[in-house]
Amino acid sequence: MDRSISDRSILDKFCTEFCAVVEKYAKYIIVSGFLAIAAGRTRATEDIDMILERMDKAHFERLHNDLVRHGFVCMQSDSSEVIYDDYLTQKTSVRYTYKNQHVPEMEIKFSKDALDTLQLKNRMKIPQTGLDVWFGSPEMTIAYKEDYLKSDKDMEDAKHLRIVFDVEERKINECKKLIQMYR
Amino acid sequence: MRDKTHMEQVERWAHYVKEHPAQWKKEHTAFIDSVYRMACDAIWRLSQQPGGREKIITLRGIKNTKGYPTLLGGKFTDLKPFKGGNGTEHVSEQVDETLYGD
Picture 1 (spheres, rainbow over the protein chains, first blue to last red):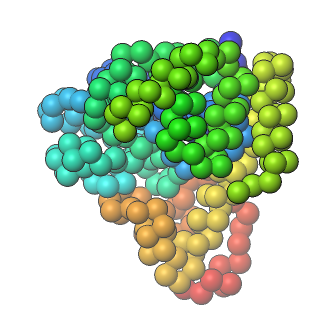
Picture 2 (picture 1 turned 90 degrees about the horizontal axis):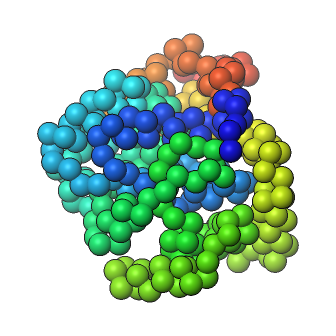
């Protein structure tokens, strides 16, 4: 579905610009709440969650430097070495924003297990969102929110996704089994 | 736990999105952008209060304070107007700075 640039929200613009840089260096997926928002859910969020395939330190340094060149800043540190050694490889996320703006944030973490790897392998672009970025599947997002996160907000996100997308219950149940195995 | 009318509204809107693929986005963008503008304005007002910048650092968990020189260390006049998703500039309403002290 083609949409004009003027239809893009602040979140859309931020996400698209950030992902365009990351795309050059690694596989990634956008997961969780932003999928629901990009699919029309009327709520805001401070952060967009990204799972990034693991990479070596030198490669991450190139990615980080390119993000900085494009006007992004990491809230945790300017040093790619600190971000890599003290956060990402310790299974801790880091957050990037536009320089001098505290929101929105892109919260990045490295893929940490077979479930993340599977999601990266099965990543998809979702025309209904109008965004040229890679997402995790709606089925996995629904499963995660209904069976793992379970807050009111997450249950509402899941309900929204169930209505907007033609999801298969069988696939959602398969995802729930995987989540029970790995999380 | 939210009452059931909240979930009913979520369902009504989701059906609207599904049934009006060409219409929902404009309303949605206006809503999202307005939330961000309000948040940015509120943070700016906080930054003008005594101890406000320290509160922002704590609230946001900012460790790399050098990355936010105008938000955390400058004056309002240093801040760039907030840009909305449609590229239009949003300028915060001028606030009487004497309300916030130094």
